[in-house]
Length: 126
Picture 1 (tube, rainbow, N blue to C red):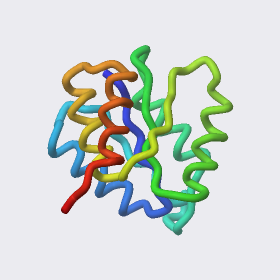
Picture 2 (cartoon, rainbow, N blue to C red):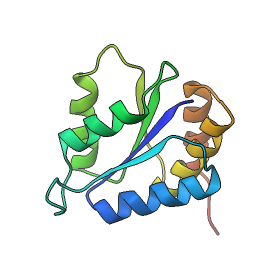
Picture 3 (cartoon, rainbow, N blue to C red):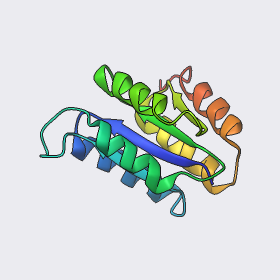
């Protein structure tokens, strides 16, 4: 299964998004990587690295981020893991996480999940 990492400046936000995604696909490997080690707002290279390690398989992993330094920090982590298949996905965080989790639990490939999640970026809610 493709691993899914939720990166946010807020630990609670990352945990909540991961929790919602797992409610929709209980067996999906979804982990949060939010906030700093001390619980404050920010993004942590170490938390993201550890999260990737916890869900990574030969199928690869996707990272969904909220904004700003979450994107930059995730990019730095990926640069330090050149041998791994990891993609950052640009999409609405909650919708993308749910779509990725459902796709992973259905054993979709990394590319199939990325395509499905990208489609969510153009979906209108109203």
